[in-house]
Image 1 (cartoon, rainbow, N blue to C red):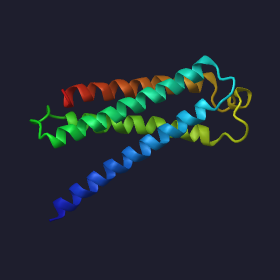
Image 2: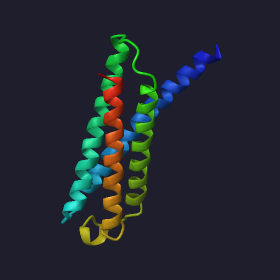
Image 3: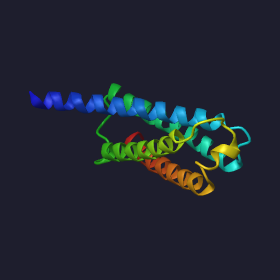
Image 4: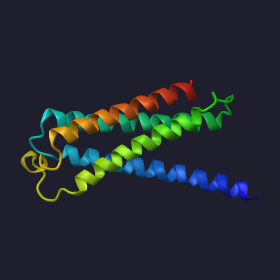
Amino acid sequence: MSGVFETAAGAFAVVGVADVLVRTGRDIYSFLSNVADAPEELNRLRESVKETLLLYQASIQCQDDLKTRKAPATPAGAASLLESATKALNRELQSLKLLIAKFKGTKTWSRVKYVLNDTKVNKAIQNLEHAKALLANALTLACR
């Protein structure tokens, strides 16, 4: 009986992470879109967030499709790869959210650049690209 509750709790946890991840990504994208006079690096970060969210939404759709059509078993470890990639993506978006939360005031680059300097923006882009590659590879294995 406890196995049923553990499965249900796991399903609710996955749905909760998905909801938080998408909402956080949209908040970050919205913030970055509203920064006036943003340099190219900030625009690249904004587009990377957008692409990552689109890829993540595709992974959710793929997982739902697999469940509804009762597809044959996916390769061993594919589910854990998807979970790991999702956690990496969530970690990166949460760290970006913390940086943005420090910012108060008018959204002009002259004010934002103290919170999101070039080093932090480039590191965030690198981490998002890494999370996208992990998720894309996990999707390739799980949803082919």
